[in-house]
Length: 282
Length: 282
Image (tube, rainbow over all chains, first blue to last red; front, top):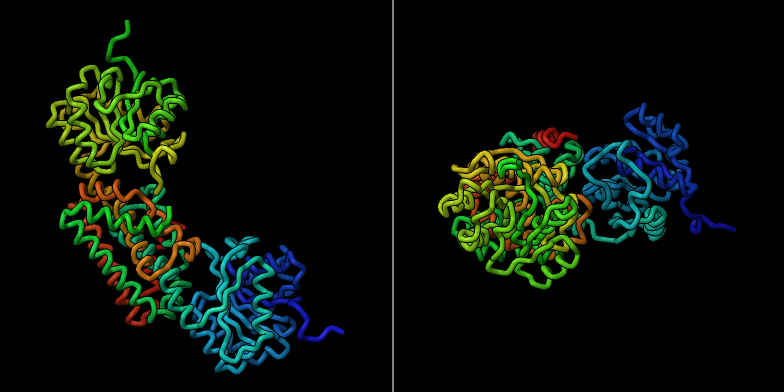
């Protein structure tokens, strides 16, 4: 007889059907998982249900979410904390609660406080680009990509197993990392590049330069300037402690470059660029 | 009877067969233009001649360059000044001398000094990416791309006509700009993005982070870190006067972002990102 422990994930509730939640819904529906879904945009939700990526729409109070084996929060980082409170009294039958946000410290702490840390494993799929919303979602978004898993302190092995199963099902490569280490690491590998790209966009805007005037390289560097301002205001605020030193390091390195340039030492300049190229690996 | 004035470009000498020179050779050869070519790498030159993109290899002293209607210097910016000196006594029958470098002030001044400003129109095709060398060259590189033209003070209408013809032949869109205005403008639209990308690469290298750890967005922002160190040391040195204020503006904007982040004012942060997104235009 099948026990609860052996059972895989047969149904998933996804709260927020943007780039990440929408792409996850598409992939899970294709793999025969029953998908429950909610989105703040009622029109969007209706269209997604009609398209078949969500089988059961949820109301704003998230009633019925406990019909799912797993719940995934795919809303902006600061909003996720509020959604967790709404969810808290409705999680009785749910075996895994996770999210998809770019910072993990505050949401893992909140899940633990709210008393369901045993079933909470924070997730962060390193996927997507500067676009956002359902229209940007697509099948295969997570295929071959890294997914960081940050279990709550009291998370059970069963919750961890289900979190791995969820992301592996859509082609992701789960890696377990400590919560604080995750947020520090992400400040460098993801949040700093985002902030640098946005900042360069503001600098060029200040000069009256349109993005279309840039060459292909400059357009690459400024691509992330098109990212969702609301999503990134949340992430940066939530991870300010780790991001401030990263910004300081970038400022210091730009200043050192400017000093080298002012000194007229062409070969020292070439060495700086050579370091960057060696890092780039091409 | 055909006069010299009516004659189009039938033969071009290209000095330097890297990404820009090599791509130009490929496109001109395809269009029936006789291509004379030189490259510092003798092996490369031999292979290019065998492949048919160059019909007549030139020796290092550039003897025979005067067989061409037009000469294009496609070597790094600071090297171009030396090549101009080598060329000076050999330009008798040549009707257009141009280049393809990312800065224009110093080379235009040098051509004027050397006495052939009447036939010199500096060119800057806004094409290419972080790669360099013949292996990165390809047909169609200039197709639909901007090409800045900066005539020397004494350049004739005939030289301007030929410069337009040369770049139009390979699909480029010529725009005439003042030399100083070009270099100031390029500091913002091209050189600053390059330096920001390289600098971010150095910062991440300093944290022991490999480029492969970044997500797709971070890889875009750091793509230009892979550009040729020698080429960019030349460009940055040559355009230091315009680049230093651009770097200062970037540092100031990062500092302002960091202050906003430290203040905890999430909405002010969202407004900064919204400005960047509005500029990005998506």
